[in-house]
Length: 307
Image (cartoon, rainbow, N blue to C red; front, side, top):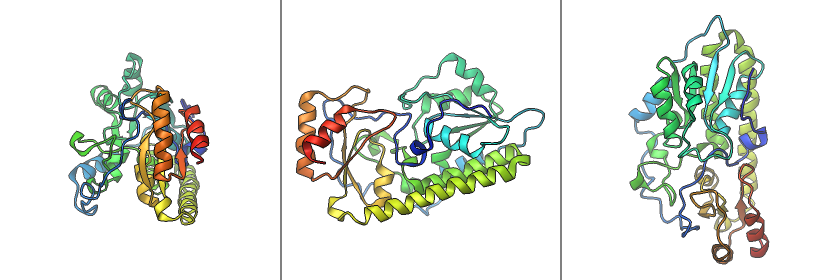
């Protein structure tokens, strides 16, 4: 099996940031979350035609014979999940969004068109995360199955809008994979599509699925147990990039802000000083960083704020 842009499993299933940048403005680095209750009160059980259509598309994969099946992926977390799911089979996996790239605005190079065109299944996150890549897939992969994982598992009633992804922008926070519990939905779809492409590898894929699902479930329980030791009033997070909305929702945290501006530039000294003051004022007990986008600013803020 061929793999490209594969990151370690620790980055995959631990709440890590990979493959995208946020929408924060440089002159307002930390922004209050505000009261999102009215924006997110929709009933998740309400029928969602968009979700149903996405799920139907994901289920359209067909058996490939005479050559190895080909899967194309976008951001690193999805590439990891797919590569680990099909490990030990002949299925080829190509990740086209390099790590450390802003997948919200990533423009695929011309060479990506031929890679996408040859794919049997194209896995994207959806929810507006990688629109340029999705447009490329739909324009060049006429015979490929395009599967939007996030859109297929998350009903609109469960979409989260926040300071980086406001409701009036129409696109929810797309970082579903930072919740190990929601990753289980991704795994179900990936397993079914991979098995449809290569039925002869069903036992291998099922074994990989069981292993990955156990990791996700164990991690979910571990985070719940660890979080229970923190008083609810103290569950406030300052993140490097605004990617922990679904993690926070699952485990009862409040994301009070994000450090990273829209570009990958570090905040200015004045902004850092303001961040330190805010961390102290808010009583933030944890700062979440990124293995993909390491930042010395995080250590400075944590040290000076006593986090």
